[in-house]
Length: 317
Image 1 (cartoon, rainbow, N blue to C red):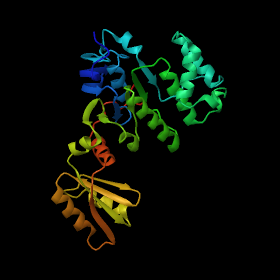
Image 2 (image 1 turned 60 degrees about the vertical axis):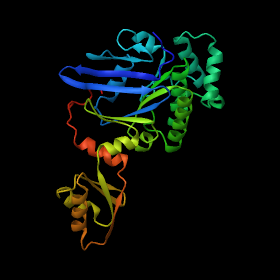
Image 3 (image 1 turned 90 degrees about the vertical axis):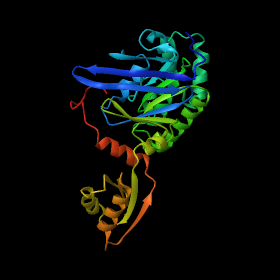
Image 4 (image 1 turned 90 degrees about the horizontal axis):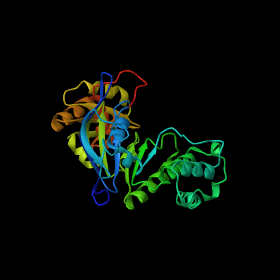
Protein backbone atom coordinates (compact mmCIF):
# COMPACT_ATOMS: atom_id res chain seq x y z
CA UNK A 1 0.00 0.00 0.00
CA UNK A 2 1.27 3.47 -0.85
CA UNK A 3 1.73 5.40 2.40
CA UNK A 4 3.75 8.33 1.12
CA UNK A 5 2.14 10.06 -1.83
CA UNK A 6 -1.53 10.44 -0.95
CA UNK A 7 -2.92 13.93 -0.53
CA UNK A 8 -5.19 12.77 2.32
CA UNK A 9 -3.64 12.00 5.69
CA UNK A 10 -7.00 10.73 6.97
CA UNK A 11 -9.96 9.42 4.97
CA UNK A 12 -12.67 7.75 7.07
CA UNK A 13 -16.28 6.87 6.36
CA UNK A 14 -19.31 6.11 8.56
CA UNK A 15 -17.39 5.46 11.79
CA UNK A 16 -19.46 4.28 14.75
CA UNK A 17 -18.51 3.48 18.32
CA UNK A 18 -20.58 2.47 21.35
CA UNK A 19 -19.58 2.32 25.00
CA UNK A 20 -22.26 0.18 26.59
CA UNK A 21 -25.61 1.61 25.51
CA UNK A 22 -24.10 4.99 24.56
CA UNK A 23 -23.56 5.79 20.88
CA UNK A 24 -20.51 8.04 21.34
CA UNK A 25 -19.44 8.31 17.68
CA UNK A 26 -22.34 8.32 15.25
CA UNK A 27 -21.68 7.80 11.53
CA UNK A 28 -18.69 10.15 11.27
CA UNK A 29 -17.18 10.73 7.81
CA UNK A 30 -14.13 12.99 7.53
CA UNK A 31 -11.09 13.78 5.40
CA UNK A 32 -7.92 15.55 6.54
CA UNK A 33 -5.36 16.69 3.98
CA UNK A 34 -1.63 16.22 4.34
CA UNK A 35 -0.09 19.24 6.06
CA UNK A 36 -3.48 20.42 7.35
CA UNK A 37 -4.33 21.56 10.88
CA UNK A 38 -7.79 20.16 11.58
CA UNK A 39 -9.60 21.34 14.70
CA UNK A 40 -12.22 19.42 16.66
CA UNK A 41 -14.68 21.39 18.74
CA UNK A 42 -17.69 20.42 20.80
CA UNK A 43 -19.00 20.12 24.35
CA UNK A 44 -17.30 17.90 26.92
CA UNK A 45 -18.31 14.30 26.34
CA UNK A 46 -19.18 14.99 22.71
CA UNK A 47 -16.98 12.26 21.21
CA UNK A 48 -14.03 14.41 20.07
CA UNK A 49 -11.29 12.32 21.66
CA UNK A 50 -12.95 9.02 20.74
CA UNK A 51 -13.34 10.15 17.11
CA UNK A 52 -9.67 11.13 16.89
CA UNK A 53 -8.58 7.76 18.33
CA UNK A 54 -10.81 5.86 15.91
CA UNK A 55 -9.46 7.74 12.90
CA UNK A 56 -5.88 6.92 13.84
CA UNK A 57 -6.22 3.25 14.70
CA UNK A 58 -5.92 3.75 18.46
CA UNK A 59 -9.46 2.41 18.91
CA UNK A 60 -11.36 -0.10 16.77
CA UNK A 61 -14.69 1.15 15.40
CA UNK A 62 -17.84 -0.95 15.75
CA UNK A 63 -18.48 -0.23 12.07
CA UNK A 64 -17.09 1.98 9.33
CA UNK A 65 -13.82 2.07 7.44
CA UNK A 66 -10.97 4.29 6.38
CA UNK A 67 -7.28 4.95 6.12
CA UNK A 68 -4.80 6.99 8.11
CA UNK A 69 -1.49 7.87 6.43
CA UNK A 70 -2.46 5.33 3.79
CA UNK A 71 -2.88 2.48 6.28
CA UNK A 72 -6.18 0.74 7.01
CA UNK A 73 -7.40 1.93 10.42
CA UNK A 74 -8.52 -1.58 11.46
CA UNK A 75 -6.03 -3.97 9.88
CA UNK A 76 -2.88 -1.85 9.97
CA UNK A 77 -3.20 0.06 13.24
CA UNK A 78 0.32 -0.94 14.35
CA UNK A 79 1.86 0.83 11.33
CA UNK A 80 -0.24 3.92 12.01
CA UNK A 81 0.91 4.13 15.63
CA UNK A 82 4.56 4.19 14.53
CA UNK A 83 3.87 7.34 12.50
CA UNK A 84 1.70 9.23 14.99
CA UNK A 85 2.64 11.53 17.87
CA UNK A 86 0.00 11.77 20.61
CA UNK A 87 -0.06 14.64 23.12
CA UNK A 88 -2.66 14.31 25.87
CA UNK A 89 -4.25 17.14 27.82
CA UNK A 90 -2.72 15.86 31.05
CA UNK A 91 1.05 16.34 31.39
CA UNK A 92 2.46 12.81 31.64
CA UNK A 93 6.23 13.17 31.98
CA UNK A 94 8.48 12.74 35.01
CA UNK A 95 8.78 15.84 37.15
CA UNK A 96 11.80 14.56 39.10
CA UNK A 97 13.85 14.28 35.89
CA UNK A 98 15.37 17.04 33.75
CA UNK A 99 14.02 17.96 30.32
CA UNK A 100 16.91 16.12 28.64
CA UNK A 101 16.43 13.03 30.81
CA UNK A 102 12.74 12.91 29.95
CA UNK A 103 13.43 13.12 26.23
CA UNK A 104 16.21 10.54 26.46
CA UNK A 105 13.87 8.16 28.30
CA UNK A 106 11.23 8.52 25.57
CA UNK A 107 13.88 7.89 22.91
CA UNK A 108 14.90 4.69 24.70
CA UNK A 109 11.25 3.54 24.86
CA UNK A 110 11.06 3.98 21.07
CA UNK A 111 14.42 2.14 20.77
CA UNK A 112 15.78 4.98 18.64
CA UNK A 113 19.19 4.85 17.10
CA UNK A 114 21.38 7.94 17.56
CA UNK A 115 19.43 8.89 20.67
CA UNK A 116 21.62 11.81 21.68
CA UNK A 117 21.46 13.33 18.21
CA UNK A 118 17.64 13.08 18.12
CA UNK A 119 17.27 14.52 21.62
CA UNK A 120 19.64 17.39 20.77
CA UNK A 121 17.63 18.13 17.64
CA UNK A 122 14.34 18.12 19.58
CA UNK A 123 15.80 20.46 22.21
CA UNK A 124 16.98 22.86 19.50
CA UNK A 125 13.78 22.71 17.42
CA UNK A 126 11.53 23.53 20.39
CA UNK A 127 13.88 26.10 21.93
CA UNK A 128 14.63 23.98 25.00
CA UNK A 129 18.47 23.94 24.89
CA UNK A 130 18.97 26.53 27.64
CA UNK A 131 16.63 24.62 29.97
CA UNK A 132 17.77 21.09 29.11
CA UNK A 133 19.19 20.55 32.60
CA UNK A 134 16.23 22.02 34.46
CA UNK A 135 14.01 19.78 36.56
CA UNK A 136 10.71 19.28 34.82
CA UNK A 137 8.68 19.81 38.00
CA UNK A 138 9.93 23.41 38.16
CA UNK A 139 8.69 24.32 34.67
CA UNK A 140 5.75 26.60 33.94
CA UNK A 141 2.75 25.25 32.03
CA UNK A 142 4.05 26.70 28.76
CA UNK A 143 7.46 25.05 29.07
CA UNK A 144 5.90 21.72 30.07
CA UNK A 145 3.73 21.97 26.97
CA UNK A 146 6.83 22.57 24.84
CA UNK A 147 8.52 19.53 26.39
CA UNK A 148 5.45 17.38 25.68
CA UNK A 149 5.47 18.47 22.03
CA UNK A 150 9.20 17.77 21.75
CA UNK A 151 8.67 14.28 23.18
CA UNK A 152 5.88 13.36 20.77
CA UNK A 153 7.96 14.66 17.82
CA UNK A 154 11.06 12.61 18.70
CA UNK A 155 10.23 9.69 16.41
CA UNK A 156 9.45 12.12 13.53
CA UNK A 157 5.72 11.34 13.15
CA UNK A 158 3.75 12.37 10.08
CA UNK A 159 0.60 13.00 12.10
CA UNK A 160 0.11 14.76 15.45
CA UNK A 161 -2.89 14.14 17.72
CA UNK A 162 -3.29 16.92 20.27
CA UNK A 163 -6.01 16.64 22.91
CA UNK A 164 -6.70 20.16 24.26
CA UNK A 165 -2.95 20.82 24.36
CA UNK A 166 -3.11 24.43 25.60
CA UNK A 167 -5.52 23.98 28.52
CA UNK A 168 -4.19 26.01 31.46
CA UNK A 169 -1.41 27.67 29.43
CA UNK A 170 -0.97 31.45 29.36
CA UNK A 171 -1.87 33.39 26.16
CA UNK A 172 1.74 34.10 25.12
CA UNK A 173 2.68 30.41 25.39
CA UNK A 174 -0.47 29.44 23.50
CA UNK A 175 0.48 31.83 20.67
CA UNK A 176 4.01 30.41 20.48
CA UNK A 177 2.64 26.87 20.46
CA UNK A 178 0.35 27.61 17.50
CA UNK A 179 3.16 29.23 15.58
CA UNK A 180 5.09 25.99 16.05
CA UNK A 181 2.11 23.94 14.82
CA UNK A 182 1.91 26.02 11.64
CA UNK A 183 5.64 25.57 11.10
CA UNK A 184 5.21 21.78 11.38
CA UNK A 185 2.19 21.82 9.05
CA UNK A 186 4.23 23.74 6.47
CA UNK A 187 6.66 20.79 6.53
CA UNK A 188 3.82 18.41 5.59
CA UNK A 189 2.92 17.16 9.07
CA UNK A 190 -0.83 16.79 9.62
CA UNK A 191 -2.33 17.91 12.93
CA UNK A 192 -5.59 16.92 14.61
CA UNK A 193 -6.29 19.12 17.62
CA UNK A 194 -9.23 19.40 19.97
CA UNK A 195 -9.74 22.81 21.59
CA UNK A 196 -12.31 24.95 23.37
CA UNK A 197 -10.63 28.24 22.43
CA UNK A 198 -12.28 30.17 19.59
CA UNK A 199 -9.09 32.02 18.66
CA UNK A 200 -7.37 28.64 18.24
CA UNK A 201 -10.27 27.29 16.19
CA UNK A 202 -9.87 30.20 13.80
CA UNK A 203 -6.18 29.31 13.32
CA UNK A 204 -7.06 25.82 12.03
CA UNK A 205 -7.21 25.22 8.27
CA UNK A 206 -10.41 23.19 8.73
CA UNK A 207 -12.83 22.56 11.59
CA UNK A 208 -15.33 19.95 12.65
CA UNK A 209 -18.01 20.54 15.26
CA UNK A 210 -19.05 17.35 17.06
CA UNK A 211 -21.95 17.29 19.51
CA UNK A 212 -22.67 14.09 21.38
CA UNK A 213 -21.31 11.78 18.73
CA UNK A 214 -22.70 13.51 15.65
CA UNK A 215 -20.71 15.63 13.23
CA UNK A 216 -22.84 18.76 12.81
CA UNK A 217 -20.59 20.89 10.61
CA UNK A 218 -17.16 20.82 9.01
CA UNK A 219 -15.08 22.95 6.68
CA UNK A 220 -13.18 26.20 6.98
CA UNK A 221 -14.23 28.60 9.74
CA UNK A 222 -16.20 30.65 7.22
CA UNK A 223 -17.89 27.56 5.76
CA UNK A 224 -18.96 26.47 9.26
CA UNK A 225 -20.37 29.96 9.94
CA UNK A 226 -22.17 30.06 6.58
CA UNK A 227 -23.66 26.58 7.13
CA UNK A 228 -25.94 27.90 9.89
CA UNK A 229 -27.24 30.91 7.89
CA UNK A 230 -27.57 33.10 10.99
CA UNK A 231 -27.90 36.87 10.95
CA UNK A 232 -26.50 38.65 14.02
CA UNK A 233 -26.99 42.09 15.54
CA UNK A 234 -24.91 43.67 18.29
CA UNK A 235 -26.60 45.79 20.95
CA UNK A 236 -24.44 48.17 23.00
CA UNK A 237 -25.63 49.87 26.17
CA UNK A 238 -26.89 49.11 29.67
CA UNK A 239 -29.21 46.46 31.15
CA UNK A 240 -28.12 43.95 28.51
CA UNK A 241 -28.84 40.89 30.64
CA UNK A 242 -32.43 42.02 31.16
CA UNK A 243 -32.77 42.77 27.44
CA UNK A 244 -31.30 39.35 26.61
CA UNK A 245 -33.95 37.59 28.69
CA UNK A 246 -36.73 39.59 27.02
CA UNK A 247 -35.44 38.98 23.49
CA UNK A 248 -34.87 35.28 24.05
CA UNK A 249 -38.59 34.50 23.92
CA UNK A 250 -39.35 36.84 21.01
CA UNK A 251 -40.32 35.44 17.57
CA UNK A 252 -37.42 35.89 15.13
CA UNK A 253 -34.73 35.67 17.81
CA UNK A 254 -33.08 32.23 17.94
CA UNK A 255 -30.24 33.10 20.32
CA UNK A 256 -28.97 35.84 22.61
CA UNK A 257 -25.49 35.90 24.15
CA UNK A 258 -23.82 38.66 26.17
CA UNK A 259 -20.20 39.26 25.10
CA UNK A 260 -18.70 41.78 27.54
CA UNK A 261 -20.30 45.16 26.81
CA UNK A 262 -22.34 43.91 23.84
CA UNK A 263 -25.35 41.66 23.42
CA UNK A 264 -25.40 39.47 20.32
CA UNK A 265 -28.83 38.47 19.02
CA UNK A 266 -28.98 35.94 16.17
CA UNK A 267 -31.70 34.39 14.05
CA UNK A 268 -32.46 32.63 10.77
CA UNK A 269 -35.31 34.96 9.73
CA UNK A 270 -33.27 38.09 9.10
CA UNK A 271 -36.24 40.46 8.73
CA UNK A 272 -38.02 39.10 11.81
CA UNK A 273 -34.80 39.38 13.82
CA UNK A 274 -34.31 43.05 12.96
CA UNK A 275 -37.96 43.83 13.69
CA UNK A 276 -37.77 42.11 17.10
CA UNK A 277 -34.60 43.96 18.06
CA UNK A 278 -35.91 47.37 17.01
CA UNK A 279 -39.16 46.85 18.91
CA UNK A 280 -37.44 45.54 22.04
CA UNK A 281 -34.94 48.41 22.16
CA UNK A 282 -37.39 51.20 21.27
CA UNK A 283 -37.00 54.03 23.78
CA UNK A 284 -33.87 52.49 25.33
CA UNK A 285 -30.51 54.24 25.41
CA UNK A 286 -28.71 51.61 23.32
CA UNK A 287 -26.91 51.41 20.01
CA UNK A 288 -27.75 48.57 17.60
CA UNK A 289 -25.91 47.40 14.49
CA UNK A 290 -25.83 44.35 12.20
CA UNK A 291 -22.52 42.46 12.46
CA UNK A 292 -20.93 39.43 10.86
CA UNK A 293 -21.90 36.25 12.68
CA UNK A 294 -18.84 34.92 14.47
CA UNK A 295 -17.58 31.40 15.05
CA UNK A 296 -18.46 31.59 18.74
CA UNK A 297 -22.04 32.68 17.94
CA UNK A 298 -22.38 29.64 15.69
CA UNK A 299 -20.87 27.16 18.16
CA UNK A 300 -23.09 28.38 21.00
CA UNK A 301 -26.07 28.04 18.67
CA UNK A 302 -25.19 24.47 17.64
CA UNK A 303 -24.38 23.43 21.20
CA UNK A 304 -27.72 24.72 22.53
CA UNK A 305 -29.57 22.55 20.00
CA UNK A 306 -27.64 19.34 20.66
CA UNK A 307 -29.03 16.49 22.74
CA UNK A 308 -26.69 15.02 25.35
CA UNK A 309 -26.36 11.27 24.75
CA UNK A 310 -23.85 10.88 27.57
CA UNK A 311 -25.40 12.10 30.77
CA UNK A 312 -23.05 10.23 33.09
CA UNK A 313 -19.90 12.19 34.01
CA UNK A 314 -16.52 10.58 33.91
CA UNK A 315 -17.18 8.40 30.89
CA UNK A 316 -14.89 8.33 27.83
CA UNK A 317 -15.16 11.33 25.53
